[in-house]
Image (cartoon, rainbow, N blue to C red; front, top):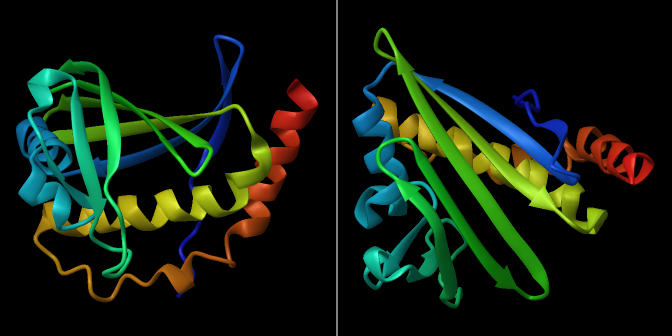
Amino acid sequence: MIPEPTGRYRKLSERNVIEFEREFRASIEDVWAAVTESDRLGRWFGTYTGDPESGRVELVMTAEGDDVASTPWNIVECTPPRILQVVSEDEGLVWDLRVELSEVDGLTTLVMRQIFDDTGSVETVGPGWEYYLDRLVAVVVGAGVEDIDFDDYYPAQAEHYRRIAEQMTDAD
């Protein structure tokens, strides 16, 4: 089954942004822990070493196979359990991510935004975030991530994200 792409283009403060949203029947604290605690983060994305209070951690992707180097991430903003913004640079691509959480009546909404200064990576990064965020949903609800396969996301969702890249180019 090919998951429906959810990423939306936004222009925020003159920056090109793709926004993703997921909802959870879970407390905001539980979703926050799944995004910020290394062991829980490792179940769907990657583990980190270092002290987050220092403003910098080293992240190793856990869903990318065994041959992945650590990458430094700078913590720009951390307001538990609502806002986490991190920035990293890997192979020339800047990863500027902001996660915002809100909870109403036991329903927690996660909105993740990635700023794109270069549209060249949008068609692969978009499906990548769809994949990882669906893994996050599985982890929070207690399901396994084994059946979530990146091949279901890319290249199937690439056209959706190519259109977003065109919107970004047209908006500049």
